[in-house]
Image 1 (cartoon, rainbow, N blue to C red):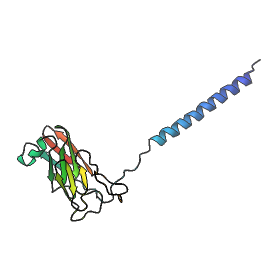
Image 2: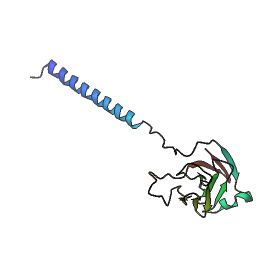
Image 3: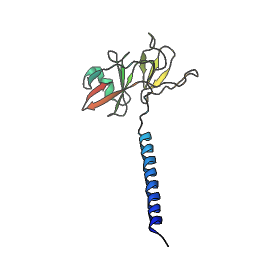
Image 4: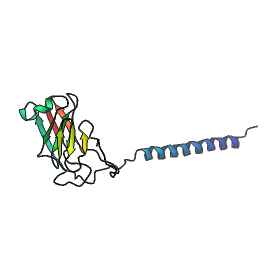
Length: 160
């Protein structure tokens, strides 16, 4: 025969178990929401800028074709390289080699769809920002610093 006391104990145990599950679930949710710190490049400082680029101007004609790129030297650290990825998406990268302290030779130059460092001859993809020929002493090799690009009907807004 089940007594009132037995029923109360079972309900109390069930309530306690549900409470423990709720606490555990809350801890897991809060732990999963913690933001991990950004892995900033220690060699490149954070420079704030915003520039609008009119793609109809002859100066930026290279950006009107897929795979085309332009180097704008007066923004960023050593300039900004803008790359036409697919005709409607554009990428912007800092024109400073990301794998050593900035120096007179660390400004990048554009060679087709690659950016090249004059110091070590590092080559970066303008489509991904990835270092294509890392040396063994780079741990870990860093990719190019990315800048935001918004396309407003032929006017690009590049900013950091």
